[in-house]
Length: 165
Image (cartoon, rainbow, N blue to C red; front, side, top):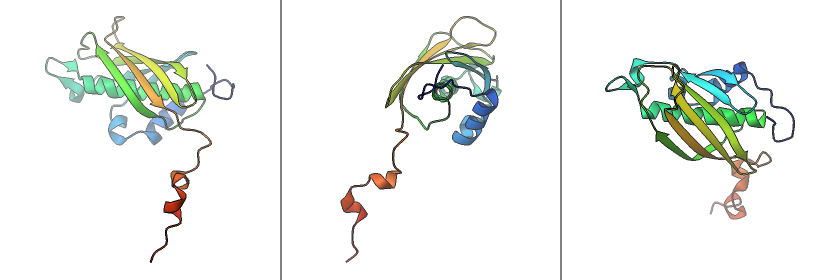
């Protein structure tokens, strides 16, 4: 895996945990996601079993699995770019194929393509004690221009030079 500038990406589990702590909303941190593996073509994260995330029948809720997939895909992009970039989810499509019952969930995400303005990432989720895929996610992410000026600089000149009368 390489970053935008051709250098090898070298983020560690500790680096990704720091990004998760610093760049994500408190309710995402409350999912207690952890990085299991950083591979050459993606990352794997774990969502620990938690009664608060279960629905009727002891099934892990789709909302929790979708949040996990989105978060894992964003961190997979951080690994791909060699550092965190504040990407924005443009679209995420989830397909649930089987229930995950009262189990930790593993999510493996791989960057399929990362261009100048959009990135495409695929994720597969499964129960930690099962080899069968339970759900898949495909996400499209807006990638900010690293050379962009602050948002206030992007305002039309007419709004920057308004005079009070």
